[in-house]
Length: 182
Image 1 (cartoon, rainbow, N blue to C red):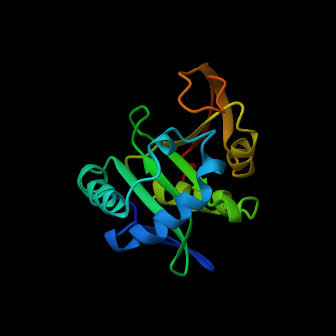
Image 2 (image 1 turned 120 degrees about the vertical axis):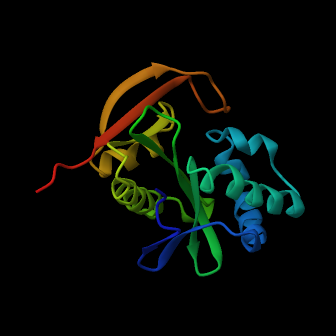
């Protein structure tokens, strides 16, 4: 089962990226490159050309949504990309991981928390999901605020490969279990 392709967050909307969103995504990533560089390994491959960005979005359909393993969303304010997030089946069976990033001009406005809350709820609407996790490097204290605000519990800290310049190699792993039926 897949989560919905569109999730409403009041004035913002989470929606599956379309090829036509490439220019807006390009603008958001270019503006946010220095902000994202310490924490996002994929930023090392930036800047992509617009054509490469279009192909990347097309590839997300084939390898994520279509095989139900990776559900990437843009966070949109109208036509502008103000962040990105997703549900990723890269942890144990029954679990799904939330990832997120926010455009540099929108940091501190609660976007990552709102998006992650919507993704948590969408994940628990999927019958095979028993728990949701958020992982971040211990040095990324801003990212740690998101799961803490949403009621996740820090369940472990584990040594992890350093993949981005700001990381110290300790993964903080937060978890929330499916609520019991009332």
